[in-house]
Length: 208
Image 1 (spheres, rainbow, N blue to C red):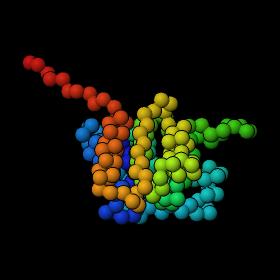
Image 2 (cartoon, helix red, strand yellow):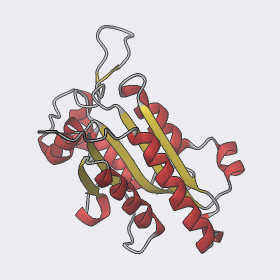
Image 3 (cartoon, rainbow, N blue to C red):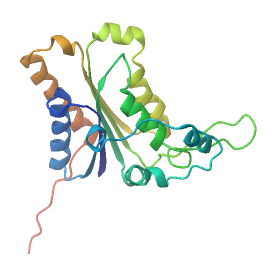
Image 4 (cartoon, helix red, strand yellow):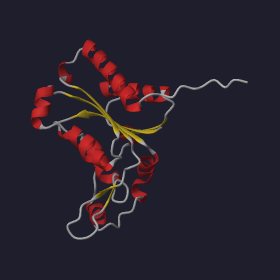
């Protein structure tokens, strides 16, 4: 398993950091090769400039400007996001990462012919995980439509391998959370990671 974890939070002491740590611990226990992209720590620029957008649309953009991130996407077979839900959606930093890294001929193939549609480019990704927190209640989040979750699990998910494993966990009402609810949520994250990873093959003893 080759797992890419995309982490997005501006504070090192956030609860999302604890969620990230559970995710990384589970991957390590499963023997996965893991790469972590910490968007705020590396100072990722989420802003797509006008010239970049023009090159994106006329397919002259290439991948050199996002080379390390594109290489990580092409390398992984497991993609996991850890982030806070703000205004029911993705933080601008993470949305900008999607805009600038999931390029044509990387995440998807452009339409062939008139009135065509894009074609998936992430068929090598067999596992997709989303772990987030939010201040709203579960009911209100679903009433609004949970756009962040839908962007990743549905929109991005459609570009991945059919039949992929998925996992999702969100701590709702984060602003009124308690040590008990946070501990319970970390247990939920651990269970979802077990589901995402699947059975870990047992090593067989070699007898002389």
